[in-house]
Amino acid sequence: MDAFAAFERHINPGLAGLLRFTGLDKVESHAEGVYVWDTEGKRYLDFLGLYGTLSLGHRHPRVVEAVKRQLDRMPMSVRVLVSEPTARLAEKLAEITPGSLSISFFGNSGTEAVEAALKFARILSGKTEFITTQGAYHGKTMGALSVTPKSHYQDPVRPLVPGVKVVPFGDSEAIAEAITPETAAIILEPIQGEGGIRVPMQGYLCEVQAIARKHGVLLIADEIQTGLGRTGKMWAVEWEGVEPDILTSAKALGGGVMPISATVIRPEIGEIYKKEPLIHSTTFGGNPLAAAAALAAIEVTQELNLPERAQEMGRYLMGKLSGLHSAYPEFIEEVRGRGLMVGLEFTDADIGALVVSELASRGVLTAFGLNNPKVVRLEPPLIVEQEHIDACVEALEQSLEATKATLEGVL
Image (cartoon, rainbow, N blue to C red; front, top):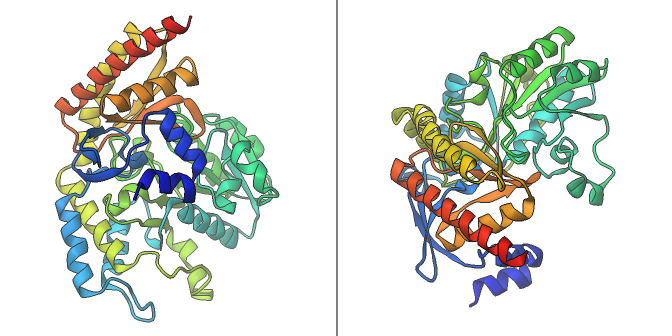
């Protein structure tokens, strides 16, 4: 079977065309640590990390073993009895999340976590409006898409959930001005991922928290891409000591082995369960296999002190990229990020696409932001070594030179 041809015919012909354009019209075979191999035997250095999911790299042995053990015991919960791994995971999340966050709803994906957060906020507050930010990405199901203000995704499925106001990211005064008596919650990413690795000015998150508390509005921190050590702290809100009312997590939570998400809420919000235990539920969310993977992932993250490692390796990567920024100012507009969540903003989206293609030809996987195609992001596993960073930067420099030659040939 030609897997790529089958993908093009039966899954997504448009995406197949994009993959072909960027030189990624290959079929993956296997993976280990920071590397992926295709079916032709070519090895790739994975500096995309499944959009921040693979904090532990591919197939971390501790996580794989935890899932295998649980598979031999009980893969799925019957739901009318309590799942021990799921209960342990909820207890662990209560220990490691900020402030009084202590009750978890488990889903399978980030967008499910956001859907739960929006529902909980409406139920608790009795209000219907939300404030989101320009460039935000919270998912593509109807509620999550309604707070993801990109017309490219929204317009084909309108009308969306009403009552959403959009303000500039990083502008706390705009948030204060947008609040009305019907505002249920503010939802934001501590660092925007798909928006182009946008890091707000220090103090912004604290200001937003103060505004939310002053007006009695809930604060939802979307840590789906930033959480579990990616930015150099276990949670990105910890850079400012912020304690949100609701926190969403996914991606890295499953250890790169199982899909799982969590919406973690304060006990006061959890009171809604006492009135209606089945107000929000799921068949597969937080199943024993996924919970076992998440528990192992958190344990490895803590034991290896991966948040601190992300800071250390992030500084090294940023230093190397700053050198390229100085050498290629006609291509690279800005280098920004925190920890191992790094973005290269190019002067033109087409230049970024050419660089992604050239990197793929040199065995390095990257991608651009869904909401900002000018930005190519680098989100390698937190277990990355300096030698891997050196190899990536060397390939990037070669790719910039090749792009320069291509453009000169066109002109």
